[in-house]
Length: 339
Image (cartoon, rainbow, N blue to C red; front, side, top):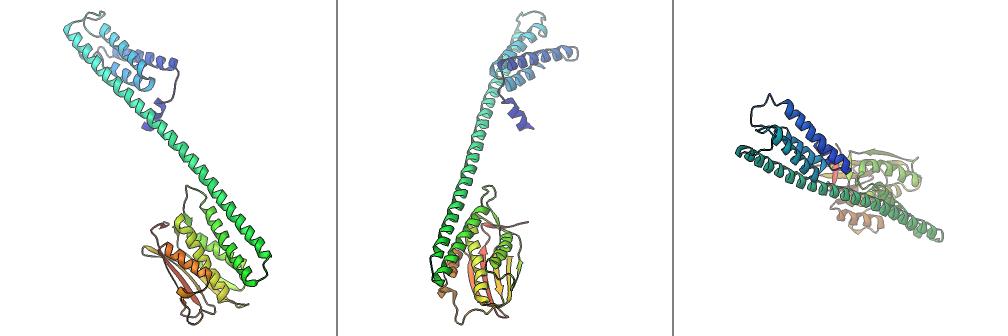
């Protein structure tokens, strides 16, 4: 309410409006004072005129406020200060007029300075809003260009794949295209600068479906995704997205070779001040003597590097009932748990 009144007082208005406001304020103040003449004890000649000066200065500006102060002072002097209907000046009337002049001058100066300060704040808010809008537009443009560039790189790699005959090279290019597509997807999910968070639970559901569909294993590998609501910020989004995709892709590719059927489970849980991402399968399991620190898999090497980047613990071990369990325990410092 007070902010609305302040903003309304700063709306630019014509000179006619401001001087009309001053005239009406003086007339209303005079009418009230005249009506209260019989009800007031002696010694209150300016009772209704002070508010008129304050309101005029606040809403109409400096000079209309000064004019209102002079007009109201003359009306009070002539009509309500003895001897009435006269501008004769006695000691008592002189003191009253000096008091009135001091009070109204103080009011006008304070209100004028306050109006200037509020006008400055309003201009600063306007500039801040313009800068925020410009930042938003630039952010959208940057994200759009990044997504387009990533898509262009993925297209170039796909074109290159057609000219490669070696199956290992084709598989490496396919993996690179998949990782670039994931980064582009994360960029699109972070496209809104006002919502710089990703719902990790939703991402895991979508990612599981996409990986199984893209690898052609959706019919022979059953899956279950069990999550709790966790959000992640931009610093963690791409590392966690790549690690989760690598976990599931590794389980599908190496856990169920050929036409082998089975099941994968993706789980996301909160453990104290950290979150646990787990991908479990009942496939063929890890090779004998497997150590993730010495693995030659490029995907797992990338996953390890990203885990170190976000301060997470990454492990891969044999499951109790066979298969493989891949775990990532990462901090919630830059993430959050949804209510």
